[in-house]
Amino acid sequence: METELLINLGILIFFSILGGIISTKLKQPFVLGLLLVGTLIGPNALGLIANPELIDIFIEFGAILFLFIVGMEFSVNKIMGVGIKAIIVSVFKVGIMFFVGFSTIVLLGFDIATATFTGVMLSFSSTMIIMNVLKQKKLIHRKEIPLLITVLVLEDLFGVVALIFFKAMKTSGGLTLINSVQNLIISLTILILAYIIISKFAEKLITWIHSNTNDEMILFTGLLLCAGFSLLAYYLDLSPSAGAFLAGSIISNFKEAKSFHKSIQPYNFMFTSFFFISMGTMINLGAILSNYWVILVLLISIFIGLIFAVGLVTKIFANYNSESAVFSTIVMLPPGVFSLLVAKESLAYGVSIDLISVVSIIILILSVVLSILSVKTNVLLEEVNKRRNKDSVSNKVIKAISEYFETLFDELNSDNAYTKSVKKSSGKLFKQLCFFIFSAIILKEILQRVFNYSIFYFILVVSILILSLQLVYLIKFFNNLRESIISLMSSLDGGIKVKKIRNGTNHLLFAVILLFIGIFFPLIIFMLGWSKLFLFISVLILIWSTSCFYNSGKSFNRLTYYSTGFKYKKFNYDSAKLWSENNKV
Image (cartoon, rainbow, N blue to C red; front, side, top):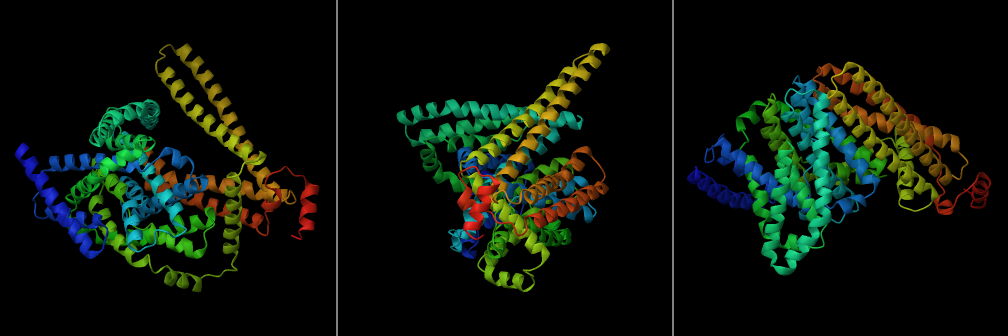
């Protein structure tokens, strides 16, 4: 066993070098070369590495080290400062692509599990490939890049959540859905609490070690933290690579983060190549050939899906013009690391097709397409403009909604009475939601441990009353948030068209909630084991959401926000009207 392990390690290292050379010669991201040579040496081709147990060990080890490095780029403090705009864009990009992938596979006749994993796989874009191509094509300084990079980083976080979710669902075995979700919430809470506690105390220890040792010891300290969190995640029945990601994130917040980056940089390529070439060994060329029609349909679905998931979403929530929306859509084409990890997780669920092979060839194709199309945005934009009616009702609606969101997000970056009210209401709503969830878990655990029927029914009635009261407070805090947003936006319109803004805001909030439910509803279908026919519920919800967006856009059309004259003081109707008349607007 030891001899086989050493031989396989030598083969991986040799072919990693070969993969890097191939990528460089073809002027493509090195990920592509690693996947190609991994396929070549794997059990489905030359068979130089054929032991499935060793392959699993290599992939798991590579994933832990790779996500540890990814986590070191993920600073919670930085993400907290990116603003609501990037969070909303990333949530809906992930959700829409999930829905598109899920629906496509269902329509092709596959089962719900295959559809769910395919949808999740297509939700994530590759940070590594995208950044490599942008630097290669000298597009890294475009104005859209900061938002897109932030969205990619947030997608990595969603990828970690997806791995945790599937791992928890798998280890729950025959438990009910409620117990599965409960165990997932408890495990995540323990992991997050460990993250918070260690974040508070570990930096002092790291600083002391750094002051008394050299950079090599800093590297070992970081790897120890990585191993500890991976082990904790494993014992919580979560993905060990998710624990490694959080360990890297802890380090990213330290003052000594630069020292960690410096000490680990020489090993960066080794860790990443280890993962990708190991994943490449699992690619089956036969599975690609037998599922070529599925791959073709998924490629078309990705292009169509990203038009809505990135192009339309960035136009609405980031107020991008057509050129920026087209460029952003192209940039987010290739799936990435988390797509491969989710595909590997699918093996435990007995899905109908070899998703690792399918997503690998999609990554290869779309990476090349990205490299070609990234410099031809203007050509594509001309084609879009030829077919677009700028005066159509839909364009006017989209413009009105995007201006509303742009004004709202700009105001939230300022500090005045209205924005403070919105932020305060948002905080209360989030806290109440968490309180409601944990109250439900605690009350359920109490009920499960009561065997006396009279006491059981008494506690059941009390539990229903407590949860009902909390639900009332939840609705109350949501209404407070809604009223705060209406007040903020009405003030920027000078308080003249409050009725229109109230009507539009109500429709818009309802539309966003319906959109969120509609695109993620297939997860409920998967968790409950429902028939694929229930997908029509998602479709109906999304049609309803589209109608609400349309109505909100009609209400916002022709509104003007006078934020320059009214941003930092409280107004009334007369002062707003007077300012409007004096400035002839």
